Amino acid sequence: MKTDKKKPKETKVQVSRYTAIFASGTLVSRALGMLRDQLSGILVPTASRDAFIFAFSLTNMLRDMLGEGAANAAFVPVFAESKDKDSPEEYRRLVSAALSGMLVIFGVLTILGLVLIPFIPTLLEWVRPITKAAPKSPEHLQFTLQMIEWTWPYLFLIGMAVFAMGPLFVARQYTAPSWSPTLLNIALIVACLALFKITPDPAWSLVVGVWIGGVAQLVVMWRAMKRHVGVGWPNFHLRHPGLQKIMWLLIPVILGQATGEVNKLVDRFFAYSLQDGVVSAMFYANRLIQLPLATFGISVSVAILPTMASAALRKDDKHVRDMLTHGLRQSLLLMAPSMLGMIVLGRPIIRLLFQYGNFGSDMTEMTATALVYFATGLIPFAWIKVCLQGFYARQRTVLPMIIASASMFLNILLCIALVRPLGYRGLALATTLSYTMNFVLLYVVLCETYGRLWDREFWITCLRIALASVIMAAVAYGVCFRCERLLGVDGIVPRFFSVSAALA
Picture 1 (tube, helix red, strand yellow):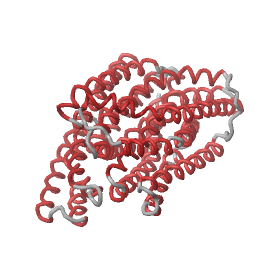
Picture 2 (cartoon, helix red, strand yellow):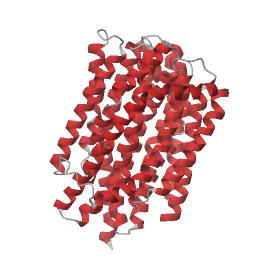
Picture 3 (cartoon, rainbow, N blue to C red):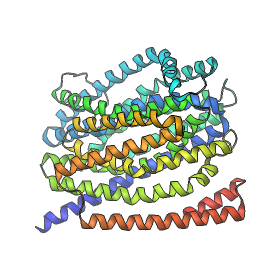
Picture 4 (cartoon, rainbow, N blue to C red):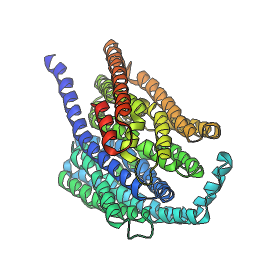
């Protein structure tokens, strides 16, 4: 009896350690991403920056849908099952077969995307009557299409790099997956600084950085997979039974992930059709939201999945339930201060990080407003990531897809309803509302599956976290407001001191 009680404690400690490893690398990557965004805001004109962000976001959309989503939902549970039950040689054959399947999928998607790029202006024309925005100039549209054509092959590079996360997570190797994204940000920073003056448009320096960073990430991740898993090359055994099982799980995962990415795509097309600067404002606001979400929220969900998958194989629902409540509680502990901090300190942070060069005060106001609407959904965003692991641990991928589809349709309807009266604010609000509904539905179904995901201790912890976060936010806002009154907001030194004092 004593041993049984001790084991979950040890497991939670291990999960927290995995979370810390993944979060540390992600934090460094996001910090470098902020520096990258600062440089692009300063050195790249608004219209060109909008075009690059719009182009690169299309590639990242499919990366998120087929790469990271697949690694968590379809690959990890099947890999974990094979690693527990099969011989090491058979497990490596499965990983190599899965690698072959993803090579084919990403290769076909890369070619197909290049063929369909010329049809993007038609899609933009469909959106414009809803937003009532002025049409983009032919020159700007042509420049945007060129950006898309040259950034699109990054999909293949990053897709294959992200695939390696699955077997590395099963091997409890979190270092390379968490640190490899820093290579992209370093490449973008160096390319932007070195090439922005000698390229026809400064945005082309970012395209060069995308290529260099994509190749670097692929090399690092494949070497890590070769070292820790023993797989470095595809065997093209596409009829492997394990691969077929993965594909059956993957189809609803792709459809479910696609709904979330369609939400983003709808937002981007609406934003692109509005006035110049909206795409950048939405992007920078989302980048700030992604800093705590990727560092803490996604790190928690990534860390608990392999443990939950193993527990689900043993039909140990209590252990799965404990991990889910642990993940929800840990996410709230990290997300609540982040959410309120973004709301009360968003404008000073944006002013400090980005308001230089081509990024003016009007961009600061737009970005800060979008940030408030996004930040209100930060906790549901993080809790969705945790809740999904409860389904993926049991290799159930259809129901999350259905719930995500309902969320997608709600987001589209809200975008259409809110973009006219609220503009870009309506797009951000629609995203927050649709994701909140997504979380509520996932949570209700998980409670029916595993039992109540709350108890007295859970609610007491939530109340303590909420109270502490509100006090923190009030004090931080007062400190920042007082410092700005005394020092002003012009110049990097007063801005830095005001934000640093508030954050401290």
